[in-house]
Image (cartoon, rainbow, N blue to C red; front, side, top):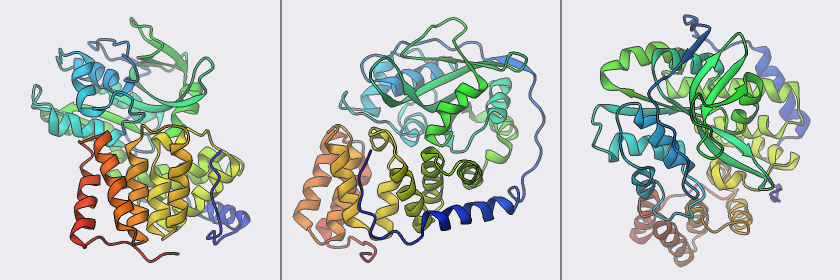
Length: 363
C-alpha cells in the first residue's frame, strides 16, 4: 500500500461519500441517446495471435490489432518505439494510439483512439461492426501478484455470457481465452474500463455509430466518472471505485475532487504496482500544489521499480515547482534517458532551463 501524507485532505470520508450519493441521485448523464442493440454474438476474424516477448504485452497486443488490417511485422517493431528500454514497466493507451496515428506509416489509413469508461455494450457494438478493440485490465497470475495487462477482444456471446480475448501472456490462440462477462468486467474496471479502438479512415462514420456516447472523449470520461460514483456509493470500501473516480476527475480537470478521491483510494489500500501504470494521482496532487505528496508517491514507486519514466517526470515537476532547479533537471534527464520518445519531459526540462516553468501555488 502506498503511504502518503494526507494533511491537505479537506473533506471527511463521510462528506465524500455524501457527495457521491448526491451526484448519483441526480440521475443519468444528460444528452445520452440510445444506440442500436448489437447481435447476440459476433466474432472478429482475421487477427493473428502473438505470444508476447519479455515485458511486451503492449507491443504484442497492438501488433495483433494491426494484423487485422494486414500488418505483417513482428511485435518488436512496435516495441522499439513504445518502450526503447525493454524493462519499461508501462505503456499507456495514449502512447499506443500515438504509435498508430503518428509513427507507423505502413498502414496510412489506419487510426486509433482510446477512451475511459467503456462497457460491454460498446465493446459488442465495436466487435460486431468489425473494429479491433484492446482493453487495459488488471491481471493476477501465478505468484507474481497484481499487475496491468492488455488484451485484444475477438468475440462475445450473449447466451453463454462469454467474451473471448487474445491473451498475449496466457494464450491460447484459436478461438481465444474465454471469460465470463462478470469476470472480464471485474478486471477491466481496475483501469477505469479503458479501451483502444483501431479503424480505417474510410470507416469513420461506422465507428462513430458504434461508439455512440463514446465519440466524445469528455463524454466518455463523464460516463466513467458517473459509474465510479455509483460503485463507490454502493460499496464505500471499494478502492477501485475511488481510484477510478480520481482518474476520471483528473482527466476532466477537476483536480481537487480527484485528489480527495485518490486519498480515499490509497487509504483503503491498492496494489503497490498501481503507480507503475496510473499517473493521475501525481497529476492531481501536483495541480493542487501538494508537491511533497508527489515526491513521496514517486519515491514509493521507485522503491519497487526504477523502470517507470513517469515517476522521474513527476518528481521533476514537483522539484521544479519547489524551486529546486538542478534536482528537477536531473529528474527530467532521467525520464528522457529511459524513454527518448517521452517528449513531455524534454519540454518541461527546456522550460526550467529557460526560466519559464509555471507551477500552481503550494498547498
